[in-house]
Length: 89
Image (cartoon, rainbow, N blue to C red):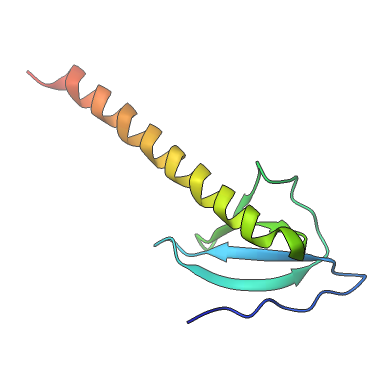
């Protein structure tokens, strides 16, 4: 399923994109709030996460968000691997 890019308005000039816990892009919605740029994002209480950007930057922001998330997960794996080495008998 390919998501349709929504139309924006003067009051809602940005597009909010959200990923579910499995890393699937689940929504694109017009939005009036700015979340701080390509190096930022949000995590919602329902477990979804994403960011907001201008329509022309959507593909770039999604790629950057995914790359940042992969990097974050890799760092967590490395940290847990190091911790496991410390606890092995």
